[in-house]
Image (cartoon, helix red, strand yellow):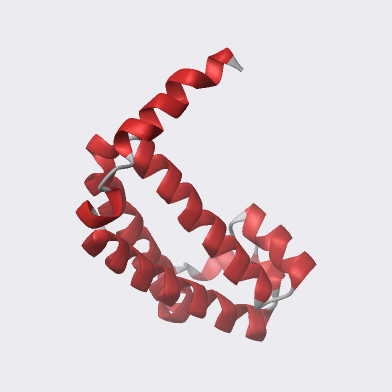
Length: 127
């Protein structure tokens, strides 16, 4: 367990004041994650979990269903974001902005973009 000592030390050094420093970033990423999660639930209720592009979210959603699967997957993603941004606190702002934009894009794609953004020939591919 000696190999984990530097990792634990870095978390202990980076954690104090973390949530206060990044409270607005957490607010933005939480809203974007909720929008993405809600749009994922919506399209899974209509089309089923088989149409999910992310393989882990698809697997979890096939096992837990179209509501609990996306919720659990999004919570796991947010926990992973917490771990990464505490560990890489110097780069956390950039990571929060990138993840927020990706969640907003995914929510848009699930709601409107799938029909507007996907070329017609993708409909005929056996995916």
